[in-house]
Length: 328
Image (cartoon, rainbow, N blue to C red; front, side, top):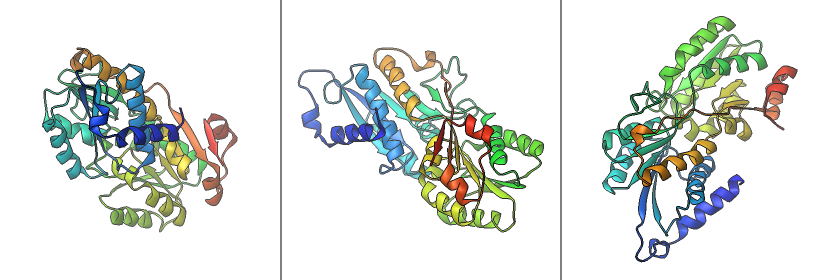
């Protein structure tokens, strides 16, 4: 189903009053959803819609036997913490968390309510689960990345911009699972013969400062780590990368589809729909501790040819052949 259909279904369902969505005499299960991004973000609306459609496929119908409580963090770690506490106070049967900051906040707020995540990069390193095979505790779900992908990000950037000599790694340490990626990037930078520059950002102003500073010398490019703060500010990033002519690689395909140069990583709609299967099993009696964390099964490479042309870059034939999609 297409993204706009996901969003249309989500909006139509959410618009119904609770009284109209509840059946008399039946047991209605309650599912909380804590999203790290903003409610107006169509990419994240698509993810929520995919999760809800996955549950519909498993016969969980909003207003019939299930109710959703959705909260949006808008890229703000403090807000996410408050919303996690609020959702836990509603005593839902299960809570679905969208990324590392949301699940961290939920883990602090409850050790008893089952939590299913869709999109964590390093659930063991972040202390969310004890192991992938047997998570333990009340949390399990679907991971989004493994560490070696970071080396691939830098390699892709070097392939499309051979003159690259300095790479700025940009992330917000409060919202990004950066520690899993930095060693891989350092190793890849050494192999590629480029200087790696870490740039921590906490606001649009510091983001612009980091990119402006990088652009002052030739041969610079950017790697943007998985980070809800950067997702929330991605339109600004696209504008700055174009203004300062910074070749950049991003951690998911949708970045390139929207105007970024290269996007490589998982499609996040898939794990959100898959997360519905774990919520279904938990609602039917399964324990999160016994449901293994599952890794992504498919990565996608999307290259924006219009952006490449605007930066004066030629996409090598081998990279064209490797790409899943070329956005004109």
